[in-house]
Image (tube, rainbow, N blue to C red; front, side, top):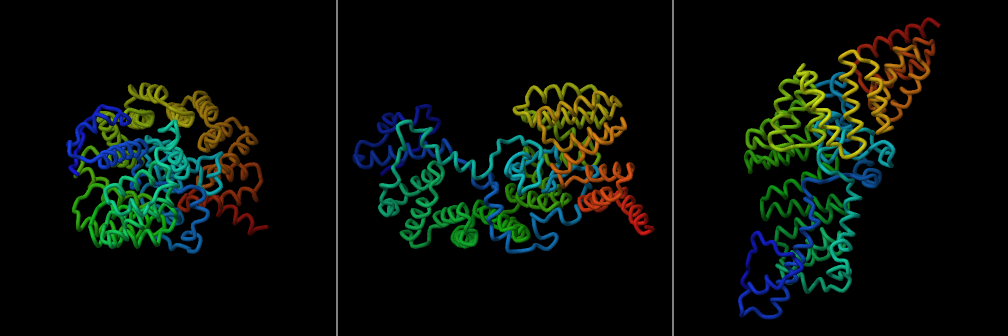
Length: 501
């Protein structure tokens, strides 16, 4: 059968008559049906296709029931999940607020960091509060559930293919149809079991020499949480065909198994075979950032920009790094570059406003924040903008405006831990200690990884004579930020007092 490619077709996928007319006249009716069936299957797949390499999240079930994370205790510096247990390389929490994975609260953040919002079930597992991202995010389980119902959205009369009636062995013997069918089952129907069965039959029919089917087997095993089996399939695929995508899939497996050093070694070996490959450099930078090796992460992002000077993620992450190392003027250049490239959203103008304020370019501050508010798509984004406006108000000395901004933050997002903490500080200035203590307790419960609520609560308790509560809160502050000098001084003062009793 002669193959054809349709380039730039504006016809709807459901109208196949034009495509059938393009086939040669000697084509049999069976081949005509197969061509039409294959075209519609691919079109339906493209409607819901998600890049499995880039988008990946662990849901609450994966984090709780993953024996790879339960059965081992990681050494410091060898684990992503335990990254906060060791000293952070780069800006300290005193100047760079970080999430559990060490990410800036107002910087450009990728999909793997967005679950765990307070007020959801994810809070039971993850430390809450991360900034909203510039890319649409859902948890892995939620995305797969929606993909599993795609047939109801794309076919009002029911699914295009009744999978329960398919003879998978028959299709496995036809390589071209089998690949199209696999992608439809895997992406459109989200039926991993049937997809795995088809991939296994096709691999056997190909005498275990087709690297593409081994990669698909690895993807199915990965989706099912069988990481060791997925690792074996990806390694076997690399033996037959050395591909960048396969390296990235294998690296994802190691990250999910909490073996970032193995993933780094794999990617660096890949860079030896594919020098200066941007996507591999970016993967290395992400892992370094997850492990709080911020200096190394920035270096790799700079290397990415040497190869691709329009890489949005690298530009944004480098700009964020400069902002939190007290270089807002340089950060402003990176964010303006993103604006010139067409990145036009709430997060972009929010960061521009902050950079303009700290770089003392006051003419653009309010305009940037007004634009950010107009582009905000949800209450969390509005809350972040008002929170940053509150910081601007504190910087210019207008504490009444700051108080109102932080109140508006909580009106849009009542689980904003930073706003609770800053409101408590303003209440302390008004000598309203009880209100301040209540706000700090709320902030500490929402964000136990932040040291500020614990230290502020310890200071207030020390001032009102509640030394036991002060000592407990100061210890929590020390755990969150071991290098905080004022916490150490307060603890030493309390220990001396208790020693004298």
